[in-house]
Image 1 (cartoon, rainbow, N blue to C red):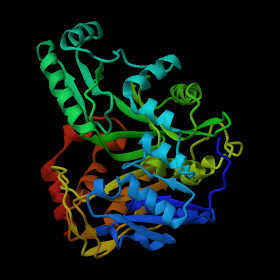
Image 2: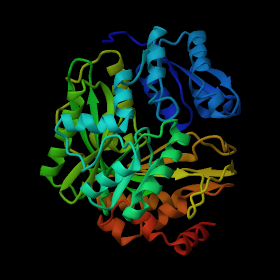
Image 3: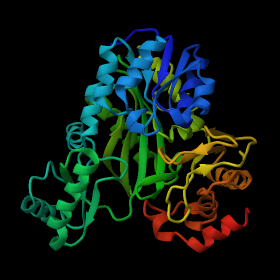
Length: 459
């Protein structure tokens, strides 16, 4: 159990999340150290941190994933804690362990929690033991014949998942029994190439689900609270595009059951720090998908409806703080929506790096922009293509949608191609506005011509 005061945090990340952590630290009176690759020398997180250290060349494997260089930067700067942000090393159990062995505080959960929840088969087993609903499924698949027997028991269609997977990678849907064994072999090869582990498991496939996740906060003294849910069903290729809070289709009884299940899972594994328990919602039934043991990209919408600074809470928890100041059941204050603005083709989703020649972010009442870019900023092909998170808050969902439409209309990013036209198109779609959509909506309803007209109308 940690009760160390944190005086200086090294932020082992880049982009908007690095800035987000730096801001939280400064408000807590904590000094910060930014690390950066050689091509990120002039990035905003290096400017606004108290110190900055170069940790290698552009490729992430040589910089932001280079554990020895990051630890050397921490030692050189005298940091007593490391915040991993999201992505990169944020869910690497070995990194968390090494940070601890070096006498520093890892701002996140214990390595054992990261290992358990990082192994999707073990995470599913933990959910079962905790009484959390799971889809009919399997443990580790050993061979094709076993997979066929299990699929027959579960019932087609089924979905194959990589035990070490994440972000939608390593997943294959199978509807035809004759194609199962071949698909399993392909999935195993892809998982081995992507994650270094070809272990697979299987679950019944839900045709029209919604993706709802619960924000949990847990201290090192056994205290666990939830901060309600987020709706993340607008996705492409299993990657989130728009998130909102609260979910517009949850009844109070289902909301309470889902939040109780998330808290129960955390208590069952003695979890501490921030975390997100993700569920598939099928009508009034919900099923455990996975747990992310880090701060989420979409944490902002939870902050907007609860008034809780989640990153500051995460830092307090790492110092041994308690949750006594948080109510057990927060009531949502209004509605919040977040759009991820990426440097990518709005129809094909292919990355589009380049230099931003003109930039204007929107403002006004109820508008928040989390971003690291500026006019003249060079978007690198080495990293994630996200440029900004545009977040709005209003009294209810209808007003939040109208505010987001206005906000997207004011956003100007020139010199590169972005997905702004996709967002502008989406917020005019009746299915989205009425809340009658599922995780397949975006890709099933995509209208390339209409999206390109949105792009033309702003040029």
